Length: 122
Length: 108
Image (cartoon, rainbow over all chains, first blue to last red; front, top):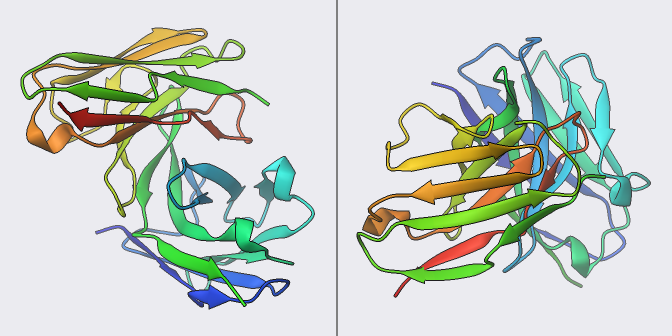
């Protein structure tokens, strides 16, 4: 059964670097029919796509975070990771990893992790 | 970037009602439009992809339509489990990917 699970620090101080990892199980990590994404949700707000990465390592980022964000893959561990530098309180929220599946008419986020809460606080 | 506008932002309805949620794209996205359902503290769940194709396991009371810039999600005969927040998401020429602002469906 395909599962994604996020892991991370929970609480982080302002100006520090946030590192999150998503572990994938139950499916081949290296496939051209799907790729991987990070999405976040500030408290009480909507969903924000952060970035997408292919198993080859090619990554794309939301323009507003491009200078602070990087996403990488470790195919041997079946993991992909997010690194966000210089965090502020605005980076507080629920962070999800998910799979983007090529579904013919539209690529869609068909499998999601349960999410991990990140709180930026001194 | 393509902007997605959902309306209404919130909606009150009763069990058994039929409701419609609208999503509008700032430019044509063909049928590259997906709908998700999210309950508090939980991950979103894919309901419909390609504007009108029901994801496996999703009840048939959910349906989607539209193409170009205007899309709708319709829920027939609302069930207690349907009260949640719904998001549209465009995948046209993605990345980047954008979500609508969400529609919170509440019990009247």
